[in-house]
Length: 211
Length: 254
Image 1 (tube, chains in turn blue, brown):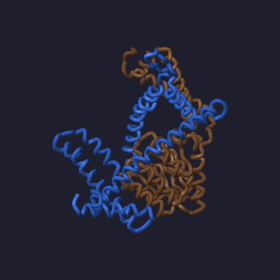
Image 2 (image 1 turned 45 degrees about the vertical axis):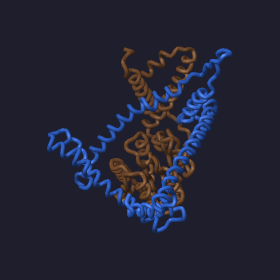
Image 3 (image 1 turned 120 degrees about the horizontal axis):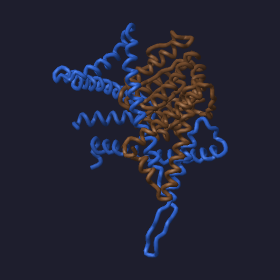
Image 4 (image 1 turned 135 degrees about the vertical axis):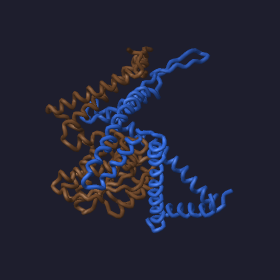
């Protein structure tokens, strides 16, 4: 990164960080630069994407099928015409249908079958030692199985959470809360590494305090 | 027959379709399925009512969601919010980061207003495209919440790494916040920053909870039966595994 680049990155980092004090013009400037740059970047990337992967292969390589996505994409622009705005619904329906179908197949395997597979675990575990072989109840696996079943029970929507269902749903809620707490801690730790990276950039690349 | 690699998946698919169809048909024939209270969904009325009283808009976002399952659930919530806002005279503002979803939300809002008693109240500025990438999107969405002085911020969908920024930024700005997602990574942040959180599959119950449509209510009853079937499968495979009979489980995983 050039010296000018380092200075721009450092000042923008400080401007964004200034939100810790309060909303201020420096933060707003950095915020708007980020949004503006992204919008410009999006236009350029999409332009070259359409030209290089859609139009050029159609015109120069004879890939006639490319005409289908080009027409579907072009129909989105019909929303700028009051008379033909209804044509926008055609590509939208296409997206709805395709996404639904693909989503179902993905969910069947990933969300149902693999989830069952990850939960079906051995309840007992064997341990061999010089004094003989021992068999124990695998507490970890038992907790995973019980936790999954109780959590599934929590999500019963058309069954009242009373009696046995109520009890298991309450345990399920505790499992959910413990899981979310653990997740929160893990993500906070990962965010700390991002903070260290920014501090290192400021102290090493910009101020040259750290060697 | 049992050697076919996709057969268990196909049978599972048929089972799901069969269960759902059975309960949808039952619901359409008049069977009633009571839905347990879901605080996050009940709070939507409170949020819109509050926004109406204060004369401020309701901000709604689907975040980075493309056409994922949670996006379809968010559409059901958006439809309800749009109908309520049109009825009560509140102004919804939807910010988007995915072009196709942006167009879909505009259609949903337009349709809801066209069916309401105030069809002329719909304005295209109600639906805004901000940016494609998460961090610029969040910056723009927070700017919108602040400049429009939104009284409520409702977030349903996938926000990825920007979840905490939006939820925490929204909390600092002060609107009532309701959020929901099926993404386990995001949920802890919502619990910390939002007034109400829809946990995981609760968002898929939104369509049935917020409307009297028998199809969606039957669908929800079907989901519950599928959960019972999954619990039964887990218990069955675990017990069979305990006795060393894993053949059925191995076939299921083919």
